[in-house]
Image (cartoon, rainbow, N blue to C red; front, side, top):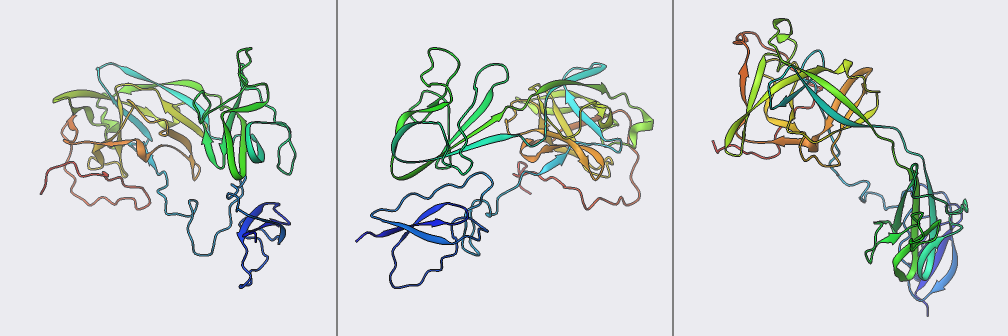
Length: 366
């Protein structure tokens, strides 16, 4: 007797294999796609159950009530930390060398949804290439151009797992426009034959790579202007000293007002690597609100870290991913232009802001 029954949904058209249970009643409501109102209909009996079919992009798998999946687990979201250090929305960097100005080069990309085409293929048995008409409802033919100036970006998922393009055994190859290419045009060629007992789903996502441009921001050297001293946490600071390699190294402060950067809104900025760092402060930007043990290093940054320039409640702001923060001990040593006045009245903080604390304790024990 065959142990599995293949069921197909009348709405989402997806299939699932379940154990044959002759002793319990099972409702025929769709338990494949979350929110689907379709009904499950028996298609055939099988000796072995197929693998779980991965959903198409934008479709969420059904789950029992109260359970957690990757989408619903308590994941740590990427928090954005403000780079502003004053009431004029100053951006302040510390860099070696005492000059009148300092330039910072950034790669700029637009933070807009990217158009893409998705092709879904479901195969049984062994195969080594994907091409032609998809198995999805739209029945699109696979078409892409992965070479040239305005080439397509091709991503291949096998049972939901992203594969890399290359010559490795688990990689795939596509046509590169030359006669030496192993793959023909409009074809995904796997270096190893894919063979499984059940269905194998291959998703091919074709999109255009986001066009990046370069912008140069000029930061001006702090000069100890008394009219700006009360407008920013770092305005009265000439330079800071950071403990690097067993010695104290001087970094001079440079500032730039955010509204004068000339970058389009909703932009993602990737600073090019340099021996400098952003200094941080919290509101209300008094002399007590400087972060001396947390900075944003501009050297050896991760590809996942970026600066986002956008409007929050109609107010422009520049914020960086919290993973770009670097904490260290001992803290920065601050050298000021003038002796700061003693604060004699209480200063009200801002409850809505995100106050950053170090993720690890790097100081000595109490």
